[in-house]
Picture 1 (cartoon, rainbow over the protein chains, first blue to last red):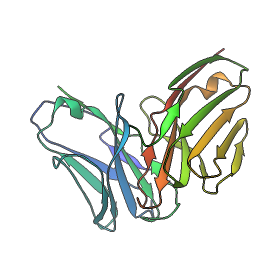
Picture 2: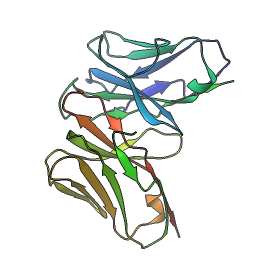
Picture 3: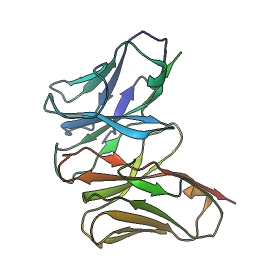
Picture 4: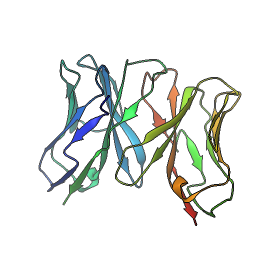
Length: 114
Length: 112
């Protein structure tokens, strides 16, 4: 079974631009979570989607948004990019939204904001 | 203040040595996971522990969940250069759904 895929793997943008990142979960998985990883803050939870609905949200500004499609694929969007948004953005999928089911991570999208 | 305090942050040892990484919190977790991450890649799950006092072994790695489900440890016996990587603990609070709270990570380097 194929793992979690994220596209693109690398992205360079300039301040003020917006960006859209994509995540395809493992087949059959309905929950997708997004995390931001930076050297200073580690992995921070952005949001989680299940059945096209946002079920949980972290403490990030409204510039960070996401959505999930009927095939469980998810996108996250960051508008008005800032230098501090440079990070590795990780997507994780799991079978269901709650419980002790395992989250499987994709390889991430490395975003650099210049 | 991090909800999950992981220590040490950096560890550089020689091949064959033993080591322990700690993950501590004042909060109770319904489950705790350990991941290993290579540079430029996503975290890969090593183990999930869900019961207080639970001990799991994965070859030379031993994972323990504290009795009160507030802390965990990862012990590696006879470390090898292939064990080099970033080790992350991540806990799931009972009220947070599938959201994971991560520790800061331990960067382990095993020198040949």
